[in-house]
Length: 143
Image 1: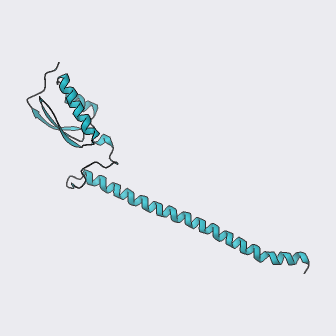
Image 2: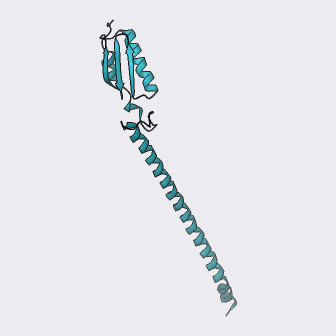
C-alpha cells in the first residue's frame, strides 16, 4: 500500500466512529424532545380534564362542592344583559334605578350566579343574569 491509502485506511475507522457518535447524539436529542413534548401533552390533558370537571361541578345543581365560579367560566354567563337591566329598572324612581344597577354591578363583580336585590318597592331574585322571581309592593314611582 502506498502512504496515501494507508492514511485513508487508518482514518476510516476514526471517521466512522465519529459519525456513529454524532448520529447517536442527534437521535438522543430527538428522543429527548419527543419525550418532553409527550410529557407536556399529558400534563396539559390532565389539567384540561381537571378544569372541565370543575366547570361541570359548578353547573351541576346536585353538586354543591364548587360554590364559586371557576376562572374558566366567563363573566357573561352570570352577567345581566342590558335589555334585562332596562326591564329591571323600568318604572322605578331614579334613586331606585341607581340602587338596582349598583346591586347588580356589585354581584357581578363578585361573580355571583344567584343573588337577591332589593329596593323599597320590592325585591328581585337573579340567577345567571336573568330575573328569576320578584315581589313586593309594586314598582316605585317614576320621576
